[in-house]
Image (cartoon, rainbow, N blue to C red; front, side, top):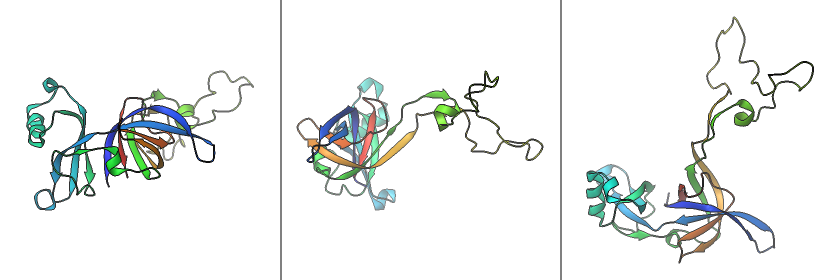
Length: 206
């Protein structure tokens, strides 16, 4: 799977050829540097490791400093592997969005969703709450309700939809259309929303 690393800038809108407004997300895709090439003979599979974003030298461990020095590039903040569809590139090459994508392509975007902390069942699982707000009820409107039977099985089954930590998960959104590419600014405009907050790292797969 060919892809590139980038940073989510924010959301905007544009107009299609039919005049309809399209909600879009602006992503700064690349430039990325090929920091490692994995081969079938040495590693058992074919893949390309890409680095994106500048990192301070003092915040980079010495093994990683040697890793980046071998590729002939400066330390990078984010590293990710992509499949063997980048065979035209070699160690140390720079990849931009225009090298991989064209307007009209369908892509998948992977990111980390916004963390919501500990949430109840109404927000986390779209429960409607228990009963109405009348007939003497005063403190159970957003309660999760019964969790199971009593004497048998006398336990709560795993996977029960209950309150808990919400968000901050790896999320992949597929079939987003590339609306526009601005190669001078390394920007790519995709339809719809992508996971994560503004300025968070994302991976775009073709």
